Length: 419
Image (cartoon, rainbow, N blue to C red):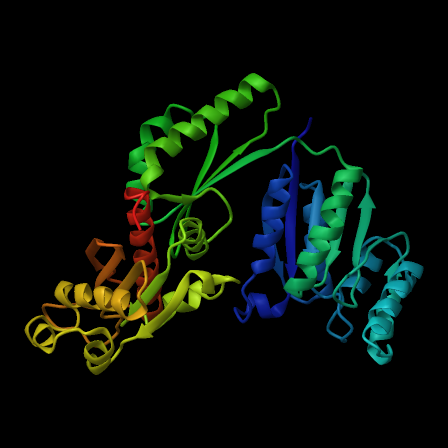
């Protein structure tokens, strides 16, 4: 089977100017990859007819599948459909399916289509229509020789719906897609370079396997991809994945598309444990992430954003002499904070953070990024010093929150039978 290569074309002056981040290309590439289609090129072009048609011409000479986003809306600067008509010599005309989709969209919302929206029923002659479940601009598919050209609106939510509910099923129906196997190992608490050093020998001795190291703000993802279909090759690949996992087990918190706070809540819930939190420099970020998960109240009892020292003393019981002798950003203070949180909420577990998020607040002895973080499971306690270093307040807070949750996860792993 020949490999299927794709190109993604993004139309939009706002993307070229840096006003809008091209998250659409990331999403499309991921969905295509999951279905055995490799994206080889990503192109961004201006809202100019000649540039658009030239990009399609180039893409058609090298890619089997060309996905374009942008310019399908109802306003005058949405020129993609006119360009499609010119490029494919397919005049725009009312389309029955597009008309039905538009009618349903407005009737469901008890509104009447008028003005510019009426142009949304027009489609190039011969186009296949992908219904838009959340918007007025239908997705379009045009075919030339063996090439497939797909067109989506640039609004991310609409593009995602059309891609997931329309185009991927269409590809599976009309093309012979290769069998593809993927695995994810999501890590935290270790830098990409150190992570690679731990598995270098295994990776270097298996050059036939595709493995990507993908840094995130909160850790590093390892993504494995395999396209062979015979059972023996698949077994060998799975053994390779297992060998990497065994070397990195300490740092892996999930093999799914999940975040650490979600995994931590599940671990606590599974053991019937409750949690209280005391946050200084993270300012409630841990609590915010935990409460993003529906039903977290059966685990997360509450938190204190103890930014001021008076809150540390009155609510958490941090001794004034500790603050005077060691300062708010110290191992001694965070120990008293985490114990105070556990006591205040009468919880099985607790986490606490104190640090210098920056850009101000540093001293010669306590630089920006210096943080002390603590976690408790029953009477088991872990306290660590971190030097995140980045002169980026938001990033330091995020790293602090992640470190606290990872420390508690490791305590749960270290003491599986304790409460």
